Image (cartoon, one colour):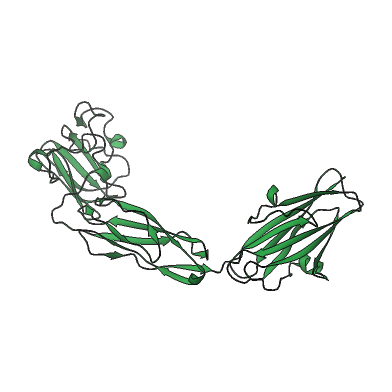
Length: 378
């Protein structure tokens, strides 16, 4: 008598047999069922098995025999096969699911519709049997980023999971203080998850640690809290670095970026070898808190000689060493540095000569802006 082939390297922990079909529970928590499938009792559908049975044709057993799906990530703790064409299993989340013939409501689902013989009836779509109603809800809240600058929005992710065995309706969200959340679904089925986005604007008054939490209520449960989520609101010290040729048009105004090749943050001039041009770099505080700024030279091409002057003081050495620091700049105020560029006698006509400049807020959670001067040999 040959052994029933259920596939290689599979350990069987339990077997149940009904009048016309059998199931085996494997050590990994999955099932393998075979025999008559006329009512969907094997949970595998009927379209792939025209004889309404599995195990009576070559190539149907072993590795070819799939496991019935009982839900995403779910495993089986125990199962039973009836003599009347239906099968039941207790899952790892303690849910009871039954499928197959539903004559006289034997599946316990409140109708007489067979389950398991059509597409879309198994897996997460197969509802659990409610023997004793157990409404239960889990709520979790997380922040998209652990810190934001004042004036920016805190974006939150609110996740509600129906961990009970009955649908939950009448969902009401109490959003984090000052936040607005997306509307919840009208109903949440057992094992279903609702993910909503909440947005909380910040102001200068929020600077510092911010603890946010949410509560979800339903007609079937008491209010459930998410627990606090901590977000740090940092002072906004955003620099707006602009550049212009002395007497020319300023570029980079109200642009805050780090791309040195952005044409909207680039000034281009032409000079003869030995010629000189003076640029004015201005750092304006576009934030809501006073700040000091570092002014750095990110790169200077060969063929250029560059000096940096703040007021009447030559600060070239400090800029090159990356130690230059402005005095405190109030919101809306600015500090300027003259950038004096000379084309050397060896400057090439074959390519552009560039000076890339960057302003950074000196305090933690640095904010950055970048501009570029391009000098061509004419």
